[in-house]
Length: 379
Image (cartoon, helix red, strand yellow):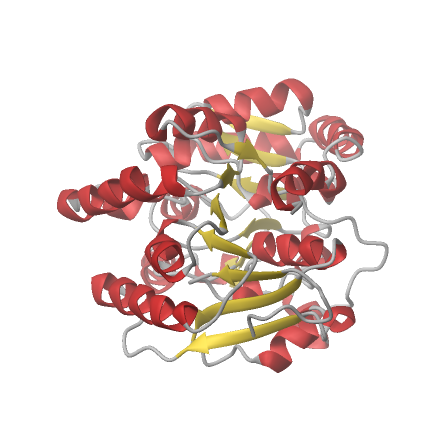
């Protein structure tokens, strides 16, 4: 689908993540439909992603959002990125859209070369892609992504990212203005009921980590820090490190203290988050990407009225000035993590941080973030 339908402007949304679990892209898509766009999502051939899944995510938008899945032979590594962008380019050459949205650097080549001249190209930097933790030991691959960023980002009409620190950094690096659209959840009047199996899996009291389970997320240190007198740790997420972390928990005799929920859809996640005692967000700040991160979970914990334990970064310090609902650690030593958890579980800490979170969420809203999107996507 590329042509205007009933005079609606059209937007192609390119994404390599599984749309079913990408809250940021889902929110942007919903906003674009609300201002009149017809959306085509172009992604990869995940076995659990189909038009029916899209309709289930947006049941009220079924006639405004469609998906085209590219059939790929590779699912990771340089062959995957090359194949995805090549097939994205071929796909886009056959269509015309009013706006082209590249989500992250791994879609930018296909979007730029596949889009028509003098059209509106937008770039959403979810993270500092060339500085992710996994690339710190791959200097050549990192250089390739840096080269792509330097060459292509300045050519896009509009660019935006997840926080002011990254926006300032990108603006200096690429001589291109970056707007800020933070990862704040949509306020929900009604939450989805948890399936019976999930309800039975959750203990009455627990500490929560939610999100991607990749290198540098601090979960190995968290497992090492866990003590028998702490509530169980519930991990809601997926990623490359899951098997390794399960082995670590087994080796340390802590498997019975950790509950692995696996992938949880964004619709169900708030019902889990609000039941927790504490949310964990402990990144390894040796990575520049993590040092400048302001992740979804920061605001998801806030909107659940949930205290958070996090690590010392310039971005978290700025957030703390406006919303002191979390405790900041100076490092990720297991003994310091354990002490931080115990401190956050104290009754007075729970009360103060929950009050701060509930107060802050009144000002940190997705409606406010949409004002930036309006200036970017108005034709």
